[in-house]
Image (cartoon, rainbow, N blue to C red; front, side, top):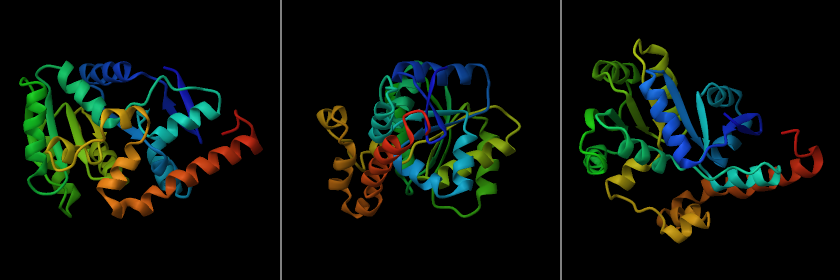
Length: 244
């Protein structure tokens, strides 16, 4: 599988359809796998935190979610086939894989239940083996609940880095194979709590702007995007396209 390294992180160069097929293959092969759909905010945080960096590097599959990651590849002269947004990745897997056992954990109380209804609309053969909101303090208890549910696919919507830390602990403790994906705010979209950007904004790579308009309080987090872009440009000019 071809990868493009963005600051040491091996990001898979797969189309959305290829990524969907890859995840389904991991499920069918009964593999334990942690999948991260990465964006500039995650990389920027990890560059300043060795523990977060190692957490990401330990993932079994890293996919290019944020438009900033795709642009970084272009600057290096190594273009990604396309963005692979986490929400579209999961929807593709749900639609294509019948009789899939899915566990949902994350978001505010009541949201994951509504999200589950939407997943069943995508594919009514899906078996929802567990639903839990993200407002809990005992990770060990929730991990045990998930393991008892024996899911094939675990969707964790707690935001970075909490969801990635939770997934790593889950996979470490689980005696059974399962594929786990951190999906951020996807539950809110499926539940109708928030709306995704219009298609033209998605294609133009402006989903970040749509989220900022919808949730102005995110502006501090959004400041990472220009910082990341500037860092990429400076490093490209100073260090050369193959050194980072």
